[in-house]
Length: 383
Image 1 (cartoon, helix red, strand yellow):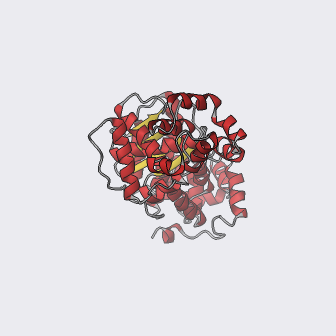
Image 2 (cartoon, one colour):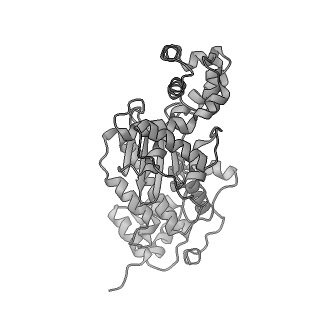
Image 3 (cartoon, rainbow, N blue to C red):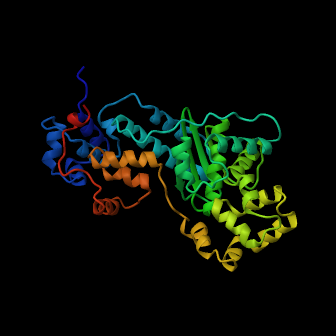
């Protein structure tokens, strides 16, 4: 039996979608005869054109090429897609699935990116309370990575570059603080960018603890990080506080019964959420419970404005809201494939969370980012 050609697969999928050759041709910027000749095997298809056709047909380059055995990333995408999640988590799960599908496509095209570091080999504490275990693990990780008592300025970059966890920032429903996917050797942490910067960072640090400890759920949703209902959550919250703001940093920078301005300076320097900061200060006996409740009642906004931290407040509680961030390694791979004409603008727009793909194409072109003016033969590119 003769195997199906790429042109025949394109024709089969086009017909299954009840799409005429003229419609497909219009969507990829060709004339009808070009599509007819391609389906009849009278001309080759370039990598760039194949990506455009895949987008027009709602398919993938892999399917058009007739590749059957999915790479590891596609297997992860399938497991994410079939996981049972609450309704309010559906959009976040779909986002994670699409990222793994894109990873599978880039794997197939053999586009390497910056290397992903291995997870740090740190011992997981098993004695003491869950809160103590989280603190000890955070201190051990800081020592292993030689952080000392310094702040972590860009936590997503640090997680990807030093720890090997891919990071996504994405607006999500208010019921969801974040999402963590750990399948095999792949770890992806998502934080809800509808929350302020300190809350986003706390979520990512919280998810990192689950990854390091190998907590059993492959897909884990974080809904309310202020209410730890299990020992795993208590450990992860303690880890997040101590990773972002270690005791040594507090003792070095702040006195007992500090002024409001000193408290805010510590919060903005270490990028920790207001509530997590106050828990640390109380637990370190820098402030008592009455002072903590007084600060909570005043609120970080009012305190920031009257103590000269208006610009810091604006950045942490206003300008960062709703931002989208794709995993850095995947972004580099995707843009490289796009510039070499192996994928169209559709996957790039989806990666960046851009609804208007054509507008993104124009913006990238203005920065000199785009496919080559020629269309090299697919067989040459994939040889």
